[in-house]
Amino acid sequence: MNKKTAKALEGSIKKWVNIRDNGGKDKTTRNCPLCELFYYEALCGDCPVALRTNDDCCGETPYILWVEHHEQKHVAVAKDLDGLKVHCPECKELADKEVKFLESLRE
Image (cartoon, rainbow, N blue to C red; front, side, top):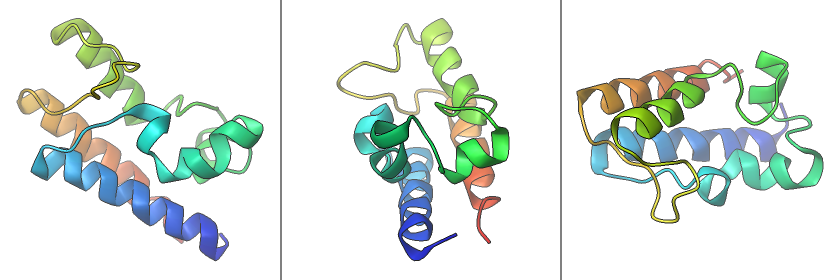
């Protein structure tokens, strides 16, 4: 993993720790350092998430469960401009799973 990608990964981890612990918000690709590098250029291309899961758009990650939970339990969709946040203990657990998944991508 090159330095630019490693820095983006650390930024994404920081985003999710902030969501889990400090009321931060998930604004999908609009506030994800990894997406800033990889999503718009080549639909995830060499993103470490896509390389691990062999899927784009964070498929096969805890992120999908996070979005589904918000759609089903909080009547919120990922494209909400205000962003998705922790509303309940299950949200916090799902955010923690995303942190752990991203941390597992470190080299």
